[in-house]
Length: 101
Image (cartoon, rainbow, N blue to C red; front, side, top):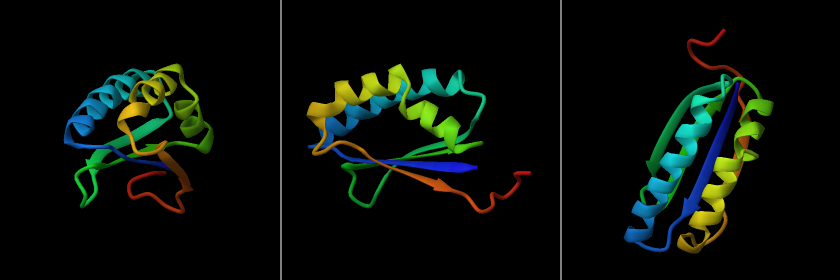
């Protein structure tokens, strides 16, 4: 499995809410069509303007397909002016995952 961590700093609370709506729309459409998608968590760090999305994929290729998808790239374009910087994406190759074969 591969874990994709997507972290972004919004500019203010209003931007945080708008980015969340954009992310929800983009991710739901891509996740539904990706059989390699295993799990998804959308959350905030201790700073409520730091958005953290954690996704689990069967493989690195499945995770890469998500970040190269048209809906995700559209989300990046639409949210760019509401973020302090481009999202920081980290892909981790999981050594083990509870309940996974």
